[in-house]
Image (cartoon, rainbow, N blue to C red):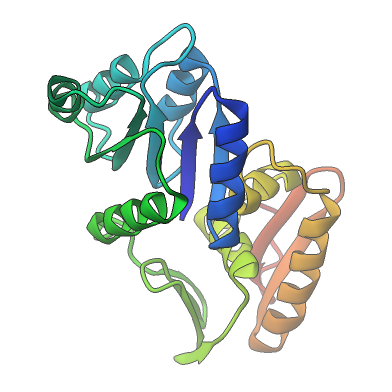
Length: 227
């Protein structure tokens, strides 16, 4: 999944990020309440891990704003407050789960797994282009009905390109989608994924076009139109 982590404790944020990245998730990390609220209004991410005590805008206010505008993404609240009324306040504000600091990373992982199972992906059908299809729920790629095992990073690149429906996707957008906003990863990593994907897809009539200085676009080989 792509997870939005909103936590102003830098050491804790790094620990959570490294642990979840090791499990294959892409993480967007924010530490300021107002910046986090703006980021969430722009979409992105399937699950939110949200600290309550944040600078400029607290986590409960962010959560209430999400629910008020109909944002149903699962939210796991993190807080040092362990009193029952504090947990009730968080759940009443719209949280899906609640984790009190300090906590074991294994418990965080278990809560994330539980929330991921609740995700409603019915609004995300398979993405298709010619003989190519990507099952967003199962994260499986099929070409002409045959399943192809792709590395998860390549699947994330493919997902971003297919969601753009032939439009150009800037390299930095691909980087954010695959690794998470602000990840310490060189853009050349995307070039490697693109190169491998092109080799896999070209024999099946699907190509990834490079737009120098702009980004990448996916299309069928016989489709020569410029996105």
